[in-house]
Image (cartoon, rainbow, N blue to C red):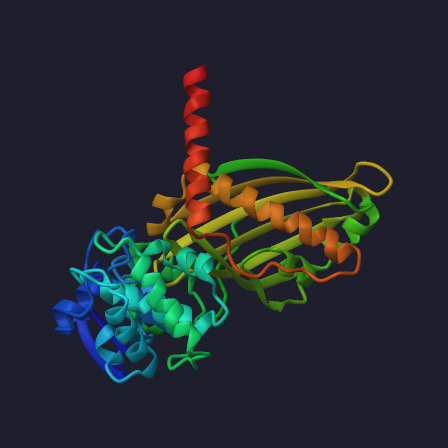
Length: 382
């Protein structure tokens, strides 16, 4: 058993728990807060979604000990919340619930949508809801209820997101759960060690055309902060004197959303207009880890055209690895590189990058399915 202390619905709670206990079981069995429902227990259906440190989290994939020191909010804590009150009323008027099993998770996600995305249209709402499954309503009423509440906004966040660093012990294995429960995952900085090599990883090679001269492309590639703005879901916390970069990368893989915080080491070779990036990061809530190494090069392709060549090796571990099959990751990379190329062209010409939100949503899911079908057809053709 491990001693765990965290805040649940505004009250500090300390309990002895098994390190393998996930957050959904902890609040239901240990605290008798049964408003959180458990469905698939694979992070797919979204029924168990609750708010952790101001963000929606799959509590069936989050170990309770990884939430040490966190601010956990279950549906019970929103009884008097004005935003959730509007959502409950709108869900009732628009017939957005039938059996009600998915409703706690739907309300948690809806709360995040209306407080984080005040300008969201129907397409964006459906993308944000793609990780919450409902067997009864067909989603029409749910979308209408959220649009109704958005129209009455903007709504102030009653639970502010909290940036939490990730300890390497929070993502490296099951044996360090005691140290995580003692507070490491809640208080550590972005100190995930960068691997010297990646054994057993998957590889990807891509070339993307960029409609600017190779000199302009190379100059842009050496500006780390600008590159981060070009990359969907990326953010930088600090650039250190030794050239290492500390920051985070948010990604949505199907219904799963994760924020990998960590460290990257960047090196440049001006003679060949090439460079390398080696990095590692962890998502402290799901206890998943990503390690990666990228070699990139700016290649001339004409007077006012160039090409960015990329060779990437990556490895996912932890619960999110079940969504990290090569065809899924390849589709994420291709979608992401498309936005990167457009942004590189903009900033190289003096414009502003527009990438911000991580790749994901229902469009991503459909694209991934099509990519998998294409892969099967190619294999069958052989």
